Length: 235
Image 1 (cartoon, rainbow, N blue to C red):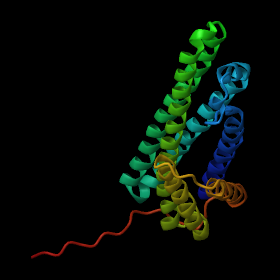
Image 2 (tube, rainbow, N blue to C red):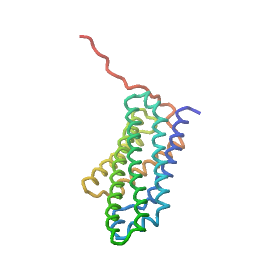
Image 3 (cartoon, rainbow, N blue to C red):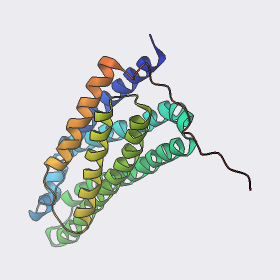
Image 4 (cartoon, rainbow, N blue to C red):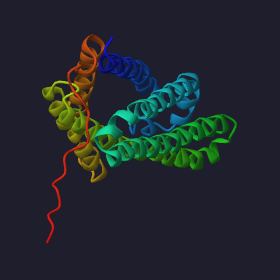
């Protein structure tokens, strides 16, 4: 089997596992800003502790796989441009660091919910206020990780576009989709709500890319080489 095709299918499998682990993890998370509008929201958190811990595990698996993908692709991207390979890998390292921080906030929220059950009603208001902060910490770290994800993916799809390892329409579609996610995150930071289809658009592209890679792999006729540079002229 052609090495390009085989590598592309490996990336397709890894991306499929990312989706399989990441999507249920998001659904099981159970956190929302509307959650703490109820006075006993920490009690609800405690009741859903098992599924929330499972969501943290799935999130860490998906995030670690992205780092794995960046390691697998590093030699290939390096053939085209070393700085691009370093940036791609570095962004995923920064991304997983932020995701770890966000999941630590979620786990500390679970610990807080256990403390809440054994606290007198007169003191529960303080724990609720701390719990609200923990949920906000998770959401802001989530937006930051999405921006790093978008930046890293933009580099990847630019690399795909230049090398034609996948059809250019998939590369352009990917750059448009992740740019939308990046701008949506900044909109949320500035207090502007964004329609869910902006994020769904990115999900649709990832699924399409996975199907292509599993069926076709990388383009076997594409050769990755360093970009040409203009020759310096003597004086």
